[in-house]
Length: 395
Image 1 (tube, rainbow, N blue to C red):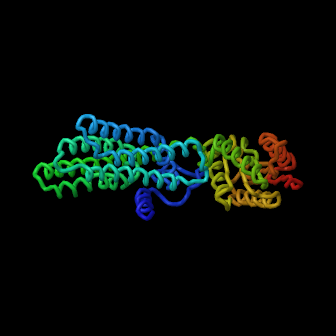
Image 2: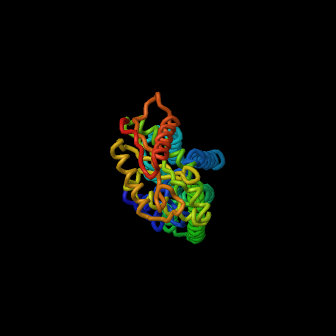
Image 3: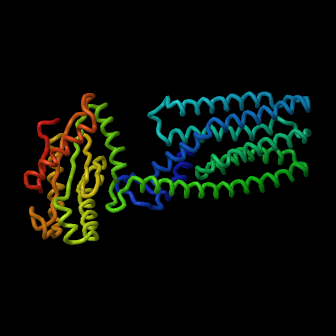
């Protein structure tokens, strides 16, 4: 286990540590470890069926050619073991695709894949010990097949840093040891070619890894940007819809209260008319940042709902705690003291909040829940703005 944890650790170095809330994420060259592991898991198991089938076909070709052309069966036991390992890899791929073990982490899936690949590489290497030194033609045939296996694995295995070099060493080391033991000039010449080829494949794999990391970085940045509001930097409405649906399902399944609030910047149209849209945009940015920074838990999510409206999702939060958080947000925005000469509420920018708490049930839809929060926001606006209205009779 230590070797493979080390390989994964090296693979993830310089890719960032800690989980950054994607609601507040910016486009960046840093890849979070969790995001990278998930991408690698998906990439590896995309080819998890094709790879062992490819190895098995090559093993069949090698053994049948040796048996029917050369009349030898040196590799029969080897062929049976390779077939068993390939079958095990197929079963692993099937289990992954069928999601039979949903609680298994990406790191564990990748570890299993690394074990299987390295075992296959070691088996390809030990085949050389089964063939006598006077059967040069069989050694050439075996090397041809093993080179094909090694080349075919590179695009898949190289995405994990330092794994492919280990894989190459596991394959080539037995050949080098055995051919040194044979000691003839032809075998020593083969060693030189094998070492050159192995080094070339390792160097190529490093370039493949770097290109893969760059592609993943761009994909993650694109995915994050697609869920960010470009003006304020918090989540956009698309992200809100996704998070809201997930949190609703989790709360419904676990039976815990879910709180949600809708926030509206009071008299924002008159602010824009008086100060201009540039100042209006800056006002929204400051408010969004203040709301985001005032949320104390990573699980609490803020999103721009549209225009000057924001929404906050508070999982596992009862009504009293939800109202307390809402009052804290209202006070934090008021403390900004952003001048608003045209406001009828105060001489600074204020916000109104409508919030509600429920334990989601089958007879209540997410849309109805959101509509209730909107009704309470309207109540706050109607009762003078710069206030919180919360359904305290809820969960």
